[in-house]
Length: 76
Image (cartoon, rainbow, N blue to C red; front, side, top):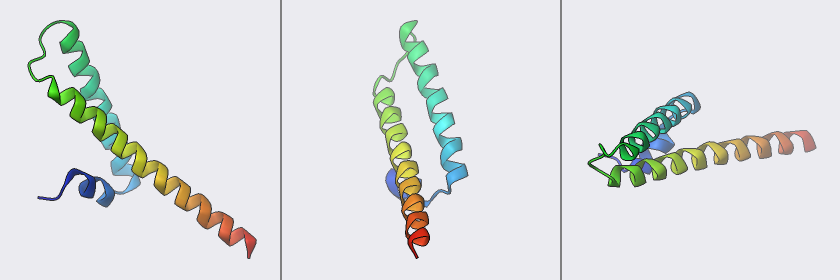
């Protein structure tokens, strides 16, 4: 099984955006469970926050790479 970061890097942009939305929704649900006292696995909150950060990092890195590519093509 691949590491979580390797799985995220292998996804395309559409999959990443979809995974980001799903992860944020799951985090919201777990926070709601925590507020009502129903949350059993509090470690899951930390894992989801890190997953969100990883996805955002990969999306931003791809955005920067695309902008640099456009800038380099414009200089020629």
